[in-house]
Amino acid sequence: MKTMQTPAATSAAVLRSRSSRLRLAALLAPVVMAGTLAACSSDPVIVQQPIERERVVVREVPQSPTVIVPQAPPATRTEVIPPAPSMQHVWVPGAWVWRDGWVWQAGHYEQRPYANARWIDGRWDSTPAGWRWTPGHWG
Image (cartoon, rainbow, N blue to C red; front, side, top):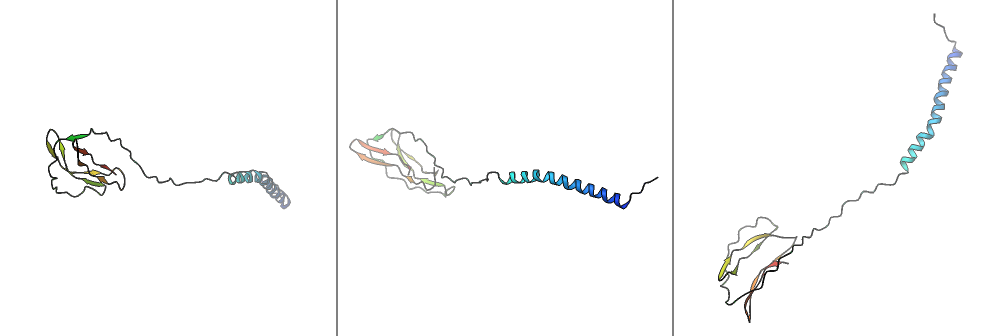
């Protein structure tokens, strides 16, 4: 057999459950507010882009011994220069080298060691002691 609740009893139960919910909300509100405020008070995050730096390559160039020969080199040969492998390559012209006699060393391409590097050709200079070789280098 079911017992029927009177409208007054039903209203009291609703009020109790409503007041329980309000009490629970009143108790939880400070906790929720504290968590929200704690999240807002954290230190700001600063994101910085990495700084682009120019890469500098320093290579030790071994000092070649001073070459002095008794006779002048032959006339420079005319070379046919092929297309460069890339924009980063520079033509290094051929030159006469001394190996117990004159030997032609053909020109070739070298890759630039850094942007805008330019090749300064080697040369033979006449000195009182003979002909001295100054090697080419990047400048």
